Length: 328
Image 1 (cartoon, one colour):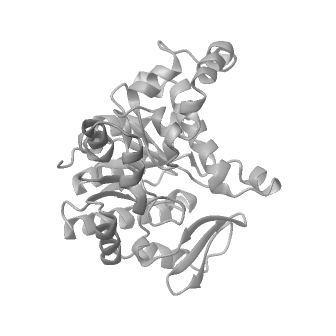
Image 2 (cartoon, helix red, strand yellow; image 1 turned 60 degrees about the vertical axis):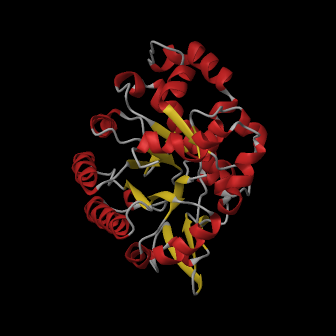
């Protein structure tokens, strides 16, 4: 069957060169000819361990071996919102130009999610519109924006523009707001920090009424939906109890907005958890080319769900083709 991978990453070489040797809380260190480690506040944030992480030709060799037909490619963390505003605006353009050029060179094999300079909301809207003209099929939204919650009112123009252009948001971890807590308890950031951060981001977008205000806005919640799908009852109960404390008001229970507006990817690949999510909102993600992921085991994971062929097709490619308007 055809496979569309909605969660994978590529670092443009020029972005890596910019980060290499940079001083401050955000650093990149080469540990081998094709190996790099990105760190934030002294904690390992991301790892590059194969050339496909930045070289499209090496990536295609891997994808052919894995049987993956199409990738929706995004820049992962560290991204441009973590540098100063003027540089962030310039680098967002460079990243989007680089990803668009790759998609143009390999038409139908790659599509891209836009990178935005969230430090400057007006420039983010401009870049969103420019990226849409370049062919972007979605927008990467990090779980916090240089420490700011993604659901602050200042970011509403971005969500309005995303809805107008019908560009889904792909919510991916940033350096988590729990970085110091993870350091204190000696736990890796990708284990709890990342998952909690995206869950707080998506919950906040729901609680503050972003999806009520923009009902056609769609979102992909990375890593099998964080922990949101497994605490739905508590989410609704907490909203009912504590919403007045924060001035929140919604027409529907929070879980209904999640069911209506949110998709999830398969990364985690834990069969009981995958069964919780049904087939209509679940899409393949691999986290290629990070060490954590499962690009080589996609078909096995989906087959192990023991679904009818129609259900397998929805997860493997139909849901993604519909959401991102790519050829099926």
